[in-house]
Image 1: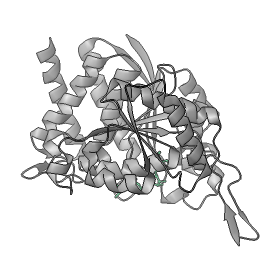
Image 2: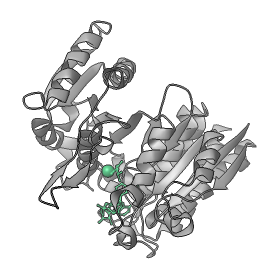
Image 3: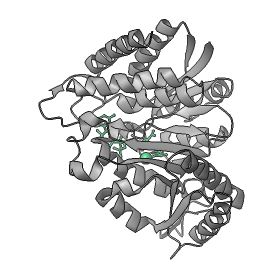
Image 4: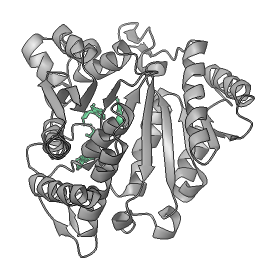
Length: 362
Ligand SMILES: NC(=O)C1=CN([C@@H]2O[C@H](COP(=O)(O)OP(=O)(O)OC[C@H]3O[C@@H](n4cnc5c(N)ncnc54)[C@H](O)[C@@H]3O)[C@@H](O)[C@H]2O)C=CC1
Ligand SMILES: CC(C)CC(=O)C(=O)O
Ligand SMILES: [Mg+2]
């Protein structure tokens, strides 16, 4: 098997977690005799420094001809005062839109070694296993106009959705619910927003084709409370772009750290862009202590969804679990009697565990 993988390290810890992930993918490639060709391209702040724009044409073209893309994170204080259209974050929004990646899957499941690592009580989180299906290319993050008005005395952002954009994400979520515990929670703010009213209508319409899936509608404010107080009551959550962005950072608390959560940004074919849920973490960038697991687990999702390599994806996930069970972790996690190690040491230990898992599978 030969695959072209574009690496978009981006900024801050994005670079650190991408290089960590490359180490693990190289172990998989070597052991299974696959060829993973890595092509590194600039995005975000790095691209602004080189090209004056956050998503250069060369980067987009490389992604369009790749089998999959791995993205670290973008942004940082250096670029924070730039106008919105040329900020690093705009590059991320644009690449998602231009590649048509309308569905962002954010699985949230705690590793057994980390049940004590969450500030939440173990009894509340031990049975939680949920999937957030977030709409990724519409809503407030893309609506126009988005601008200051009347000499800075007013401001407008626009929440705009086409009906088909809601239909396709809701459809995807029903499909995932059907393949899991058949429970779908649609999160909206239909008591206030017109867009949410339409969203709710669409969920009701679509539910007719999925009589085996139980549907629940929940307002986003209540959902954010229930995620913390009763996370195991969720299976699949479907929601619009900004609600999904916020709820997934909140849900990361169940797993012990924001650095743990992977994500897959997908469309209707096998292509995908895989990115951790966290950002560029400027407060810890360059210190060698970033948690690379969200990115490494995102690469496992790439193997599973884009390349059909279920066994290899599972090997990585098991290697992560066993490394954590041995007590090794970066400082963002709190494991009783664990051992805090650097990003590089953690990656080396995971690589060893991957080797062990491969031997056991042969
Ligand atoms: N997908 C992306 O590229 C995203 C980019 N951003 C950008 O990142 C920059 C920083 O944003 P923040 O709000 O601080 O969010 P952030 O996710 O970068 O960091 C929030 C907190 O979590 C910690 N953290 C995050 N990931 C970690 C990891 N892997 N290991 C250990 N600790 C980790 C950070 O140290 C920080 O204390 C901003 O420029 C923002 O726009 C934010 C979110 C997503
Ligand atoms: C940085 C933003 C564009 C998006 C974000 O926070 C995310 O996708 O998690
Ligand atoms: Mg976010």
